[in-house]
Length: 154
Image 1 (cartoon, helix red, strand yellow):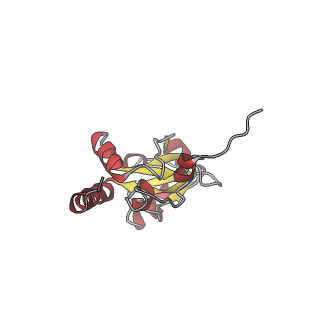
Image 2 (cartoon, rainbow, N blue to C red; image 1 turned 180 degrees about the vertical axis):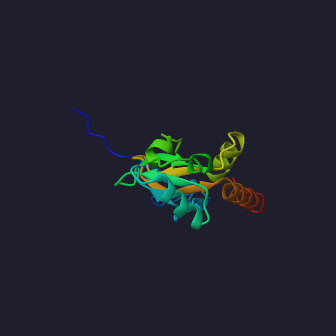
Image 3 (tube, one colour; image 1 turned 90 degrees about the vertical axis):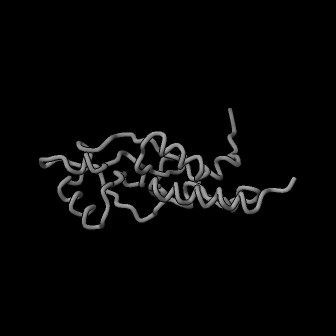
């Protein structure tokens, strides 16, 4: 028998508040947009597309009833023709990122891998928000500037 006790990384991965040196630093969760379009796998793609576009987005996160990320509909998938469901058009199992990842690391990863956006989830896969690359780059640039202005003392 093994009794698991959640540790600090689990705490941070859940997006809960922290203390110490990293407490005030921007993270994936602090920069991610929370009010992103979502849909269920069974929804009609034409209806989802209309809702997403009218909200000014070109991406939709496909979730289940518990807000677990199931897939992603980017512009290419949203533009598919026919009366498809979100599930049949989505990119299943997209890469997701934990809320505690430093924004500088996220910005570098997103640029290197040409990701326009990335879902931020809890360790259980529950959607927290969507990190947009431009937001990540801007926040990372600000974080670097803050570090230069006030270096850590040893």
